[in-house]
Picture 1 (tube, rainbow, N blue to C red):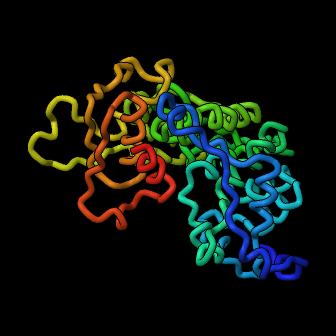
Picture 2 (tube, one colour):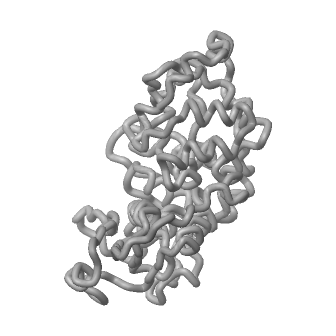
Length: 343
């Protein structure tokens, strides 16, 4: 975090009463018919206006303290407000290897820390992060620089989700030989086989994978550790092994009727509903049945994803069944707002 913010010549009293700037969304009647991203985000003008709401708080800044990655958010917002979008993206990328992904699907804990949230609404930090990162990625400003020196160390990474990709980037930057093993046909882990397209388009992840491949990271897909290769083999052939397998085991309710027809586990339902057929193994290519009325049990982001997916699959009515109140629903407000608006 930077101390420069405390000395920047900004009118904090005037900024504190500025209303949030709306970012663009696709019309409801249009976005419920396909799996394209629902949020279009900011443009060059609205991004500058929204970033200019930042108070540039002196350290310690609540937004940065609330960010698990420790992003220097005030600095990134300052550069955005000055129109330096690539510079802002580089600030985000300095502490996060996936800024364009985090900007889209992160629960935005930083925004909960933003002091403006007490009154007129916190800054849309996540959407600004996605906006500047997309621009920087398009301009090639976020490409990984090849290491100046290479070692003879071999690193094996199991899983190509966010954790695996992060470790792969760190290791390749240090000059090591990196091989990433993925059980699915395409690298990306939960970013491909979990998060629906309407929240995170697959091409965003594929661009990051391509960058890693170009700098030397090798991806081995359709390979399940413990079945095709053992951990012992990996340990014998490599200097280090990182296990980033993710949370692939789904929870079960253990109640009568759970295995009746047309009842699906959330991950399987999302994978088979929104992932392109060519990216799926042969035993997952049949689309789940979706009737006129759908009930989703649970109140987290995954449950909301299933509800939004069901609408796109043709359901006329979707009900989210949750054991507590709507206020206690663990889904982020942004995720929950879209299906409620559609209803």
